[in-house]
Image (cartoon, rainbow, N blue to C red):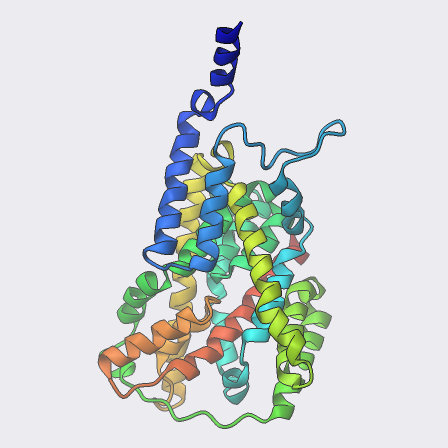
Length: 376
């Protein structure tokens, strides 16, 4: 009898129930955790995603099990409702808005065009994914990876193709983390050394009134033109208004810190938990990751190319390197523009100039998501 119970116990352990595919997923999760801790690639999100993936692929844990016949579901199943119901991504945008200074964009509104150009990669990839056999809704979810905006990618995918959520989220955040590696070769290939050396004039001061009116006007215009973008753009601008109003410091700090940190933890672990072995280890996953890279590269290239056009039209006053910051990876993409510019001119300070298209890219990706939601 004792031996039978011992055999039953051994059979109930994870060691006896772990499959090869689960082992592979645990290994992939370990790589993400390593990149977050050792390489510091987007650790605030890559670490929760990696650990969520690690936990859900340990056998018999039941963390994502739904409630059945009155039996409680797994912990992550309940937390995932914040993603499934479209709650967490807009709350992330609230925190991002509260942390973002739109001053550089207001001071040089032409950089809005660079943020818009970088979204070209999204729509190009949507077409490409459709031609490769993905459904229109799946193609929309894959294309949004090109915006390099994790919360937007999660929000759109949860609405259009929830079965792809794990793959799309991991691809989106991976490319956000790899911005310093992926972008510089593209930037250098499309610009000349002389263009990279261009020093831009200092931005004009932006008044408090302008900073207060900006989020209100942007919300009004985008909300009327593309109503589906309101959850993301509206919360982004609300967070910024909390910051710029000067009368809600407590709310602004909460949105930036406590609330944002809690939502990031819940969002990260539950998105990682969607990357179970049966959902992630498929040929389609490799295609999604590859298409995401294409989308991101095209978006970067489109921003730089428009930057070159604006450089010519301005008589050489705009450094085209800032066009690469039109993707939404804030503020990393802007830092890359600064770094590459200083390689060729140590006196070049492009960071604040690049923040214009960078924050425009955040708005642009949210608007692109709204367009795709409206169409699909």
